[in-house]
Length: 116
View 1 (cartoon, one colour):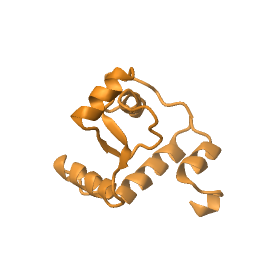
View 2 (tube, helix red, strand yellow):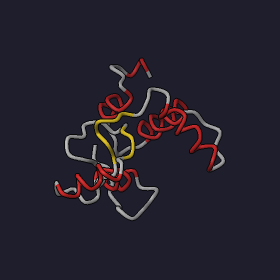
View 3 (cartoon, one colour):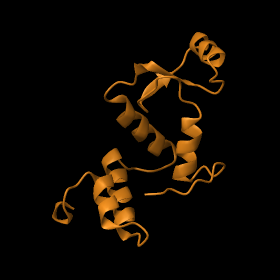
View 4 (cartoon, one colour):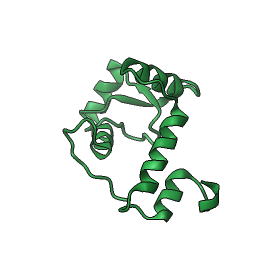
C-alpha cells in the first residue's frame, strides 16, 4: 500500500510518518520510545542525526500509548478509544476502491474476510 506524502500537511498520514522518521535515532527499531535527554540529543547530533528526538533505549510503558491517545482525543473534543480509531481505519480502507482486499486484511491483521 502506498500512502500519499504531503510533508507539510498535518492531516496527511504519510507526511506524519515522514516527519516522525526524520526524528528517529540510530538503532531505533520501535515507534514507542521516550524523548531523548539533552545529553542524548548532543550525542546523536555528533553521530550525524541532528533531528533525533527519541531515545531508542527507553521504551514507553504498556499503558502509556492508550493514555496518550485518550488524552489527545479529549483535547480535540473526541470521545473515542484506540479501538474505535482502529475500527474507523479498517472501515475506511475496506471502503476505499484504491485499496485491494489483501492490503485491507494485512492492515487489520485478519486472515480472511469472514473475520471482519
